[in-house]
Length: 403
Image (cartoon, rainbow, N blue to C red; front, side, top):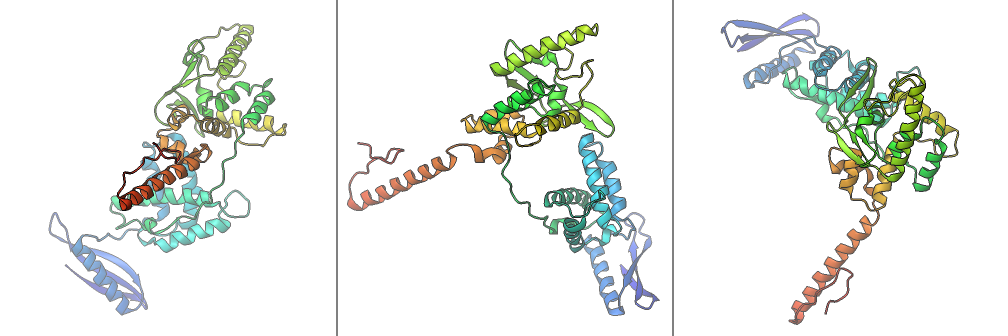
């Protein structure tokens, strides 16, 4: 295997490699463009020859980052939900491609990615407004780009993933805003005579997601047993609406309090009366939350209606999704086991629940400190008893001696 140089113009070189075809054994020529002096071109040629010999050689190509990311979006379309693909496409087309899309994929360096992140934080907005993107949004950019470039490396288009050498900006932790129990009572009363009553009750007293509320049907509501089965979620994308499995990928059963049962029973009667005036009967296949004619309520409608309703009150103007957070904090703050809370919320793992809400579990720090203190006292006593040659005295969990 050999290679040689050809000067195209002052400071511009062609590095020509003679590479045998592994199948036919015939010689193939691969041309690489290089800019620099002759000595630098010779060093680059030696590097390319060495790469061929160790098996890390990449054939020259003109694929840009933009072209590859477009191909990557097509590739993952069948592997993710339409909503996730829509979010990936938005991040790629609005944030990543404008920043580094013109760079050749094989020429992309970690320093260029890092510089793109820094620029995005300063002036990365693409919505006709001045300013930069938040660290959280740039973090989303990093995760998408890292995933895409990882596939490029597996496909042999890159020798390694340059995004691995880049750290996303730090996202500052902010305490989660929710409603406490007295405020929750105010919230329910504020929406009592509005179409938002049942969505609010299902979110703040049952922990259902917005899409799960919009997809809930009467056949999944058992008012006698006092439980509902969450088996579907309504997803809204640019292509339209579709019913799908819940976010965790599996259904769950949520027990209902007497308050929720009463509200749902009253709501069912009202819905039956509304449909009767239209000459229709209420069936188990009907949606619990629906327009007067029984048609589907879009998830965005829930959020918009909630925002208008809560704005007219003196309560904090939180998102509708924050009602779900309120339910979680109410459970954990009142001593409900995190596993139970996780099941009600539909988290795939209890660790997700603990990561999000462990700060509201009462007594965790105090219990931990007390346990360590008890263990320390026990160890100190054993050491003292051993030194004195006497029998150790057991220590209770409250730190007192046990006779």
